[in-house]
Structure formats: structure tokens, C-alpha cells
Length: 129
Image 1 (cartoon, helix red, strand yellow):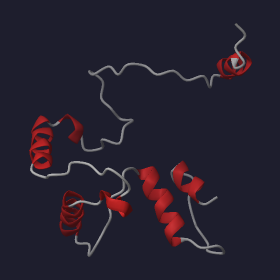
Image 2 (cartoon, helix red, strand yellow):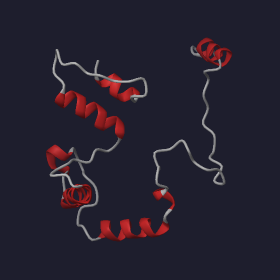
Image 3 (cartoon, one colour):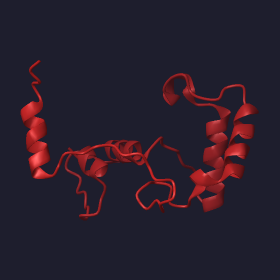
Image 4 (cartoon, one colour):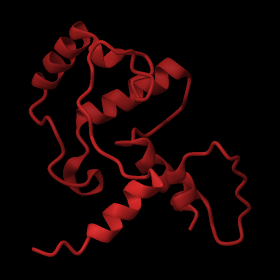
């Protein structure tokens, strides 16, 4: 069988850009994830989160938050974060990627000047296009 991607795969391997997934070694210190505070490994936090979720009749949005997926648990979480950080209001996004796309598309208009340095995440740069 002729693989139409064989040449592309060979080129990626030759250039050192071929990527593969590898199983995580649980004994290593994780410096590459978004779990900056190490919260993903706290069993007590997982238990409390499950207890909190089970106290609500809806556990997850069944559609976009703007349609009918915004529930009390989301609002309570956003309020708690705002209070803890001294903010009047806020919104929690599903990921940094979504936050960058949403923020730039919502706030920036044609002709606005956006200043970014070289360490700005690629999703933010992508949102400017």
C-alpha cells in the first residue's frame, strides 16, 4: 500500500522535527505542564472537587455557556476567584488558548496597536491574524 504521507514523514525525521508521544515517567519532576502549583497531584483537592460537583444538579455544560451551559457552579467559581484576588468581575476560560483568542477578538479592533514580546504565547499571536 502506498502511503501518501511517507515523504513528509521522512522529511520530518531528517530535519529532527518528527514528534512522538511518550508515556510519562511518574518519578520525574514535571516542569512542562500547566500545573504550576502541583495541584493535579493533591488527592484531597480531587476529593473536595468531586464532593462539590456532586452537590450540583448539573455537572457540566451541555452546550456553549452562552446558550444554556452557564450554571451556578461556574458563577460561584468565578465569584470566588474574583473575591480572592480583589477583582470586581471575571470570567473563567477553558484554557489559555481560549482566553487569548477570546480576549484579543473581543477587545482589539482594526487599527489598534498590539504590543507583544517574543515570549508571548503562540495562541495570542494567532489571535491577532
